[in-house]
Image (cartoon, rainbow, N blue to C red; front, side, top):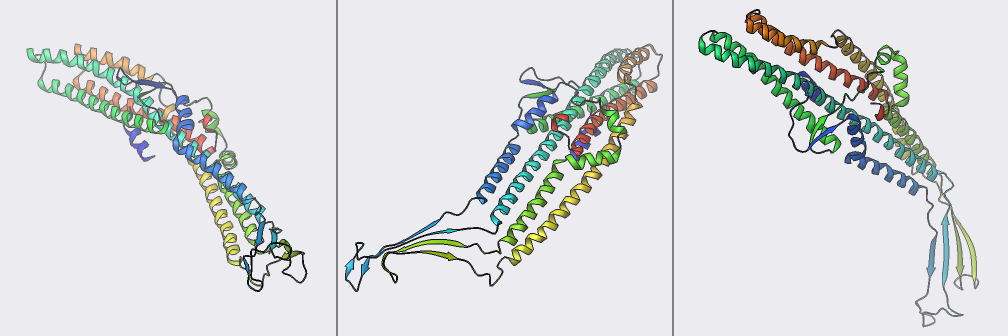
Length: 419
């Protein structure tokens, strides 16, 4: 946002572009590119898929264990590898049975973690789309300001050419000529600032979308048809809507549920899991061809999970605190976003929709009247300077309004296609 503030401070519309490799894009193009081509989002989606696979892995049972004992040398009988009728071998097959339910709890926790990461990815998608929109809007209104400033410079240039002729004849004072030229140079410097702002916005847009070439913003991007409904909406209703829809809130809620499942798993791990074995002993036991069943149960003389259970319980409190923090953050962001949108909209509503067009027409009239001597140099320069300030300010307000609308959608948790 700090970069955006700097951009908007000097914001000024379609810049002359190179005749090669120029790409006109709409905000729909930008949004689609961010969601489909951003490699960071792609990596995060892969991470979520990997976590789902990990959770399935946690639900698998242990394989049975096969133990085979074959004789190599019997010293008392001086026999090697005796497996015949009088020989000996031992076979056992053992399978553990996790009756505690810890495995299912861990699998559930893993699935919740994966869902939480999916929501994190969704939230990141929305943030990246919003950041791309900021760059797009700065570029769009920069283009519009650039055209207006260029038109004004063209008019002043023709005036300066005439003044230079009159200066050579002694019909215009050097002070007046220099004052007009100083105004021209100031406007040209402002146009250069606007051009630099556009270069920065274009670069940020290219990084966000992965697009190459000389990008030119082609449409207004943000729909303002629902502006009045947003401004007049009840704040508490919007806050509840935000908390119920925002992906970061849902992610925090899922992370807390995952911590609860992990705590349940840790407590259940304290319950011993028995193992059942089938044993065949040819003649090493008290009887030949001995077949037996063996049950193995660990004795819980010490709870070896007491501290991990305690840690898991504390993590539930940790994620509860994080959830409450995100909820309170969502509330504060909604209130601030609506307040900012109302402020910008109220300020922009004071400006007539055709102000810039009227000012451009008046500029030509002022220049013509100055040439005829009907307007003093001071009046002429004051008008030009005031017009420049108003032009930049109005375009900055338009950009701020477009960005504010999208930011409201972001903090409300709306789908990126609604931004």
